Image 1 (cartoon, helix red, strand yellow):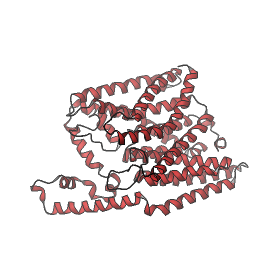
Image 2 (cartoon, one colour; image 1 turned 90 degrees about the vertical axis):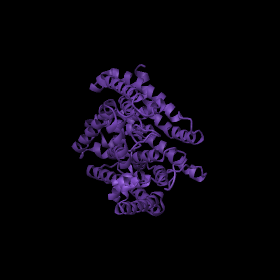
Image 3 (cartoon, helix red, strand yellow; image 1 turned 180 degrees about the horizontal axis):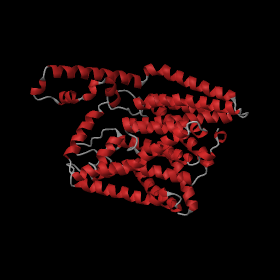
Image 4 (tube, helix red, strand yellow; image 1 turned 90 degrees about the horizontal axis):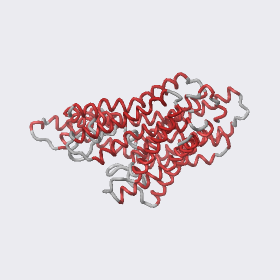
Length: 475
């Protein structure tokens, strides 16, 4: 792979984003029609792409421009060694061991690291103008595909349910509603920013149609993290707009169009009005009501069990769940975590009983289960139990370093054009990290981590060029 091939693959990796919605739709139908066929199209294509990205990284790193180039090979070897040790130890330690399940779990969890580094090198081999033009446009059109497919699924009454029972919401033709919600929440600020810029620079206000379709899709999904992530995104969209107006007003830029600025404000107001109008009937509102009723019933039953002191007899599974459920002491925590502390308690007990090999290199995917894998759905905690103390350090140190570095550069340059212009990219990255901690389905979901890796690599690339950054060129 020569320099020309490296540049070509860099562009191909960006257009790989456009393939994501179609991979997920095919996977969704495959899971529904062939539920016992474990190897999905999404896993297969992403595995092949991951191998190609690894080859691309090794070739791109030959430039030896910085310490990352000199050490990335050693890190990738460390990941491979961790995967081998994790599989080997759990082969002889887990009550139930499935090589396919363990390998697939390891692949999904390590995918975010490889794809992030891949995007980092892709951006290093593309010009700033190419990146500015391609990244937001590709994300915009990818999410238009997601939104349109969800609406078509609803109209044709072929949409899948977000939740298997009880709660409301549709995930279109996508298999996992939580993962779909995470994708929509992370990309919403970028899609909105693209519509704003197309309107401000060229007067193409019809790009707001993609944003409105995305709002409908987010409301349809019905997950809390997705909906409230959208609300946070809208808040920062307004902040971004007023910073944009203040900057050009201060610089007295003649090219600045007040008319299109007001068009954008009108679109934002219309979007907010539509959200407020739909919220009372939205799945997320009805789901919140259902969840609060369940929490109140559980609190009432828990008090009755404790009051009657039924601990002396054999409790049913539900009664044991209520007695041990500490989330019920705080309804807000119970609503936010949705029972995740109970899963944490189970996996934690398995970890304490595990041998030293598993404590250092992990329990593997789903813990030491006997019937079916159990995950907490809080990515950072799942990573700790899956890969152990040493594995957690290896897999999470790069992400922690990126978070610290971007936070440092954000607050150091908070009054610079770079931060104002890329504020919504920071918001998208922050939403992804927050969701990975609280609700999961981000770092260990390749469909989601692809977008998070794209945003992280985009920010890292532009941080390196802040001294030569031209705010007016970007707008």
